[in-house]
Image (cartoon, rainbow, N blue to C red):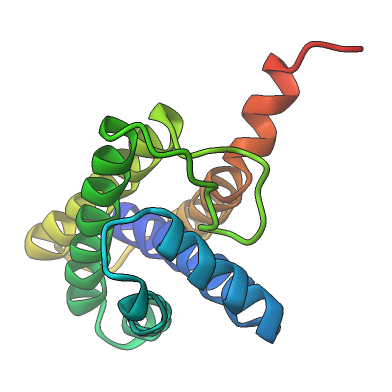
Length: 173
């Protein structure tokens, strides 16, 4: 497996571990996520809780698949990312103001930054899948470690992207 694929697996894994953990850490956290799904106004209110549960189940399945069956993990990640990106674009287009609850509570409403982040993650998932299809022999140990570290750091940056952007764009008072 190439270093590139290892990096992609680590990045996608970190992002979806953080996403699932933020929603499953407590009952109020899951309730807040369910409320944010309801806020999107894309589904009837009675379907918000089942949809939220399905999203969290998919996130957890992606994490497991990244370890045991990365091809399936990349496909699941791409499917979920495509769905949430379409939901985000639809929400923005309709003018609905909804908070991003991807990684727990956020003070940021869904916007272009979330579409770009999801598109980047979708590209990583697609790249990882393509890398699996063309992978030659095993990665060199040093390359594998470097790729894993890059994936972990990249994933952490994407998880905290709202904070990073706000750090550089918020006006001091």
